Length: 251
Image (tube, rainbow, N blue to C red):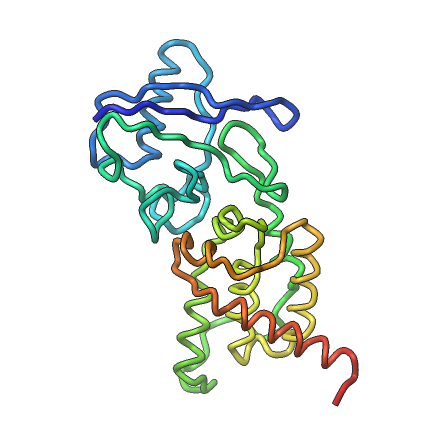
């Protein structure tokens, strides 16, 4: 398969970037989009040109590192899944493909397709520690947790922190990410001691990082590789109201 590419190139944070035309030729339909970029980079290196910088790690849809916009969609057209799971057979032979970094103020571009997503790390760090014992696994029945709560907690904990929710949101909101991180602990007894302070600190950190608020467009849910439900945003709002109620001293 052959493709016409337009790829964002930007030397560093201070430089102006632009879309640059490339060709990808003789690409296997079973190659992933990242493998296609590897092949393009091999050609650039042979010509003595600077390869295209992009992030990747596991390439199995687990780590969330490979965040890209492909033809205007966070992670491309094959949802649910990360861009490392987007295979070239999903495109037409000869199709034009535009590849860009995530575009929001909270994720500044480092180089080419690489963005700094450490704002998400700072939101998690703001939540602080968990005081519950985290050593060897306890006996399965020593802490009784309703199955519904355990299932919901696992669903929220599936978030891979890729930032696609914020990249797809017209408000650049990180509410789905923050909601997932708050919810998976607030649903479990181990997360209860810090439940109130955690949500307040994480929401404040999210706002400080410049993310927008949620207006229920559901783009976040549509592009999430882990299929995390937007209903967790409602839970985050309830947790935030509850925490403000408790800290205000209301009975």
